[in-house]
Length: 81
Ligand SMILES: [Zn+2]
Image 1 (spheres, rainbow, N blue to C red):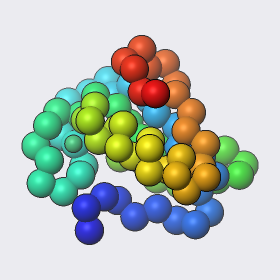
Image 2 (spheres, protein in one colour):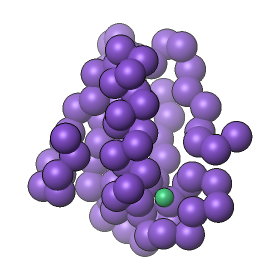
Image 3 (cartoon, protein in one colour):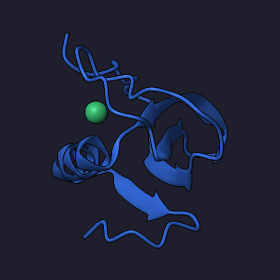
Image 4 (tube, rainbow, N blue to C red):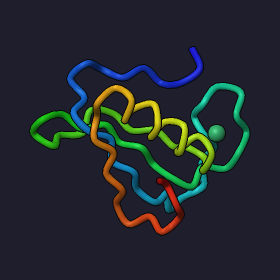
């Protein structure tokens, strides 16, 4: 499995700046994480979160948008279109 599995209850993905040292959680990726991706349900309750490097943040955001989920950027200045 290349990326963390997401529950069907996920309504949105929030992207937060990663303020601590962590590695990207994508399998075989050794890059330093710059973003925390947090999946939340319809009541904005966090379901799970995982750290991602910049390229994987973009690919996860793209994938989640493709699933019809909202991608919410929280305090990130880096471009995630
Ligand atoms: Zn990565």
